[in-house]
Length: 113
Image 1: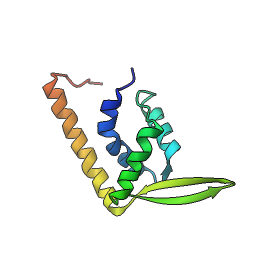
Image 2: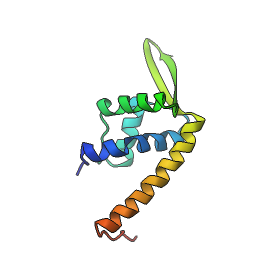
Image 3: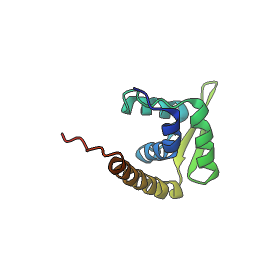
Image 4: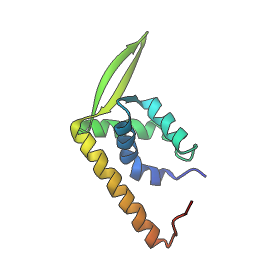
């Protein structure tokens, strides 16, 4: 089961910030593939959702970019700014709290290993 674009849209900034926090720098396609890999294809981020979000994070000063030339191709890498690192931690904490609240609201018991 893939998740709806509505759910993904509300969590995309947090997903991107968390991925960038765990990696020195990533390019767009790499981000989409890493999300697919980690979620076993349950979350698939489209370019149409990814790049506007990356540009918004850059405009907010949370992400910096670096252009690298690979042969005739240009690859744009994204990494967290100092403000982005702090925001990533805040967003992850907020998301964890939100998921706990949703579990209570929906009366969902956490799975035990």
